[in-house]
Length: 206
Image 1 (cartoon, rainbow, N blue to C red):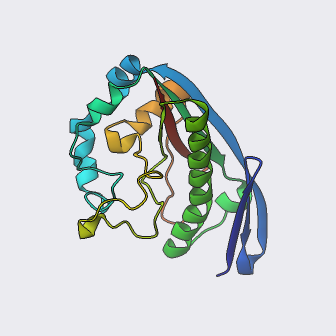
Image 2: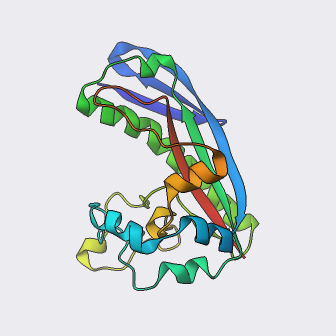
Image 3: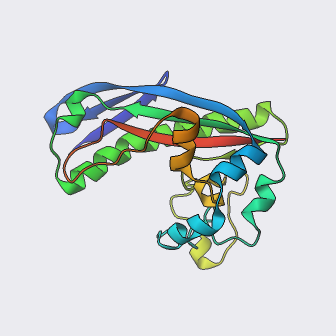
C-alpha cells in the first residue's frame, strides 16, 4: 500500500494509497510550564519506570535510553522548571471508523505519529536556541540516526542532536498528561484506531 504524509501549520495531511482516503487530522498544542521540584515530586520515579525500560527493545540499544552512566536525577536537579510541550492528534471518523489488519494498523499509527514526533523535536530544538542553557526532552526515543550504533559499543555519532525523553529519565508521561492537561493516553484496539494520540516532550529551563 502506498503512503504519503505531510505536516503543515500544525495539521497533518495523510493520503491512504489505494483506498484514496485523504483527511486533515486536527492537532492541538499542549504547553504548560511547571517548577521542577513540583514536577519531580509528582511525576518522576526512576525505580518504577526502569522496569518498563528493561522490557523495551531500545533498552541498552539507543543512546537516549537507559541504562545510563549517570543518575537521571542529576539532570532533573540541574534545572529550575520544565516547559511541557506536545501535541494531541485528533483522528477523524474517516480513520477511526475503518477496520485494519494488524500490520496496516501499525503502519497507520507510525505514519501519523512519526512526523508529529519530529515536528515536536524541531520546535524544542528551536526553543533551545531561544533559551540559553536549556535542554530539550523529546517525545520518545531519539531517532536521529537510521540505526543507533550503541549496540556496537561506539559513542553516539550525533551527540549534538541526541536528546533523552521524559520517560527515559523516569518521568510518568501518563500522569503528566492527566495532571497538567486533563488528558488520558489512548491505544489502538485489535483492528481500530483510537479517537486520539498524544505525544509530550519538554524543555528543561535554568
